[in-house]
Image (tube, rainbow over all chains, first blue to last red; front, side, top):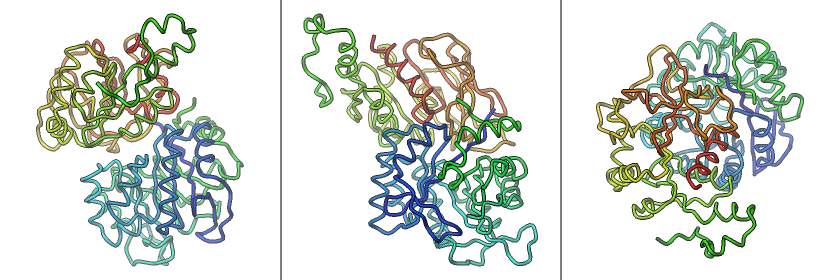
Length: 256
Length: 233
């Protein structure tokens, strides 16, 4: 049986891992290569690196980080943050990333998903979305935010995801703008709406504070994978603890 | 053949006086392991895994280098039809057929496995290498496609390549099509995703996995290590 994935996220800026609340107030906490190796040993199913600085200089640093990580971590690596075009993607994939995630660039130029999928394959193309609940709060009431969650677009999340999957997105990294950093649980209405909408895997992101939250995203939210940063980052829980918790609740996970 | 990865001074007369442990280390470096570069695929990841195991892989697009290697890896990512085109354009299709004829140890991964079959139905019907009779088909509707993530491999044969790897261990998959051999004689592992499909083939010295051992953590590294021990002994 296909297992559900537990994915630690490393938010990186200028070559250091940081974790903030609602995209601001960053706290420095670690070397990304060491962190990645640590998570690998703990049994992470995959690693996501998000370059939240994403200046051109930071991108060079990130390529270097990915190269180093790929030499000692033998699970899939996804890299995102500030990737603007095919060349940016190619650099990350050549450095050792297995997937690249795009957010703002895909909203501005949806053809990028089609082009990337044609060149690298759909499985490489992860569409990252920051989804914010709209005022009316109905089942389709989420709006796409870009530029690291700062800029509203007026685009409906579910409509954008449908289009993006048609174009070539092979996976959705779905972050709840409202829940991110608050540690009070994922937005499982959002997770469920998207998981039921598309046939590609969905990674739930934003809001994990307890292991029960991970379970809820995989059960209620019907997500294929859960992404979390701070609960693993500050060693509140190990990846192994998280997986044992999920296994005890009947969720299929990989335990080694 | 000239390879920058070769280390001189490993001929038989010198070996006789070398302690066994050191011999093992020398063996890892004196045999050539080629990773075929045909303009696609996850060569870097495969090479990183082999390097981690203490080998010095030679990433090459040279047909003579591939044919002279002691063991060869055929990586693959992308579409089956495109992969076949790249293999043919680079002369590697004929090289792979030759390797199999010579019974040279060969490990094919993901789409590298799929092109071993007779044909694929990905993006229309495309002829493949025909080493394993059978077809490459699309995974059934109703489940998430691609099949992406960690899934169990049930071992249906005994083979040293599985040494130290428990039955039903999870490996990392990412694919939308699967190999369907006409007969089961070469099926070594199976995986369930909507249907039960062949996730690993072994035929003489030819090994092929639908999953990515280089992305499957320690069990994946173990499988490559077992293959190379078997191939280079």
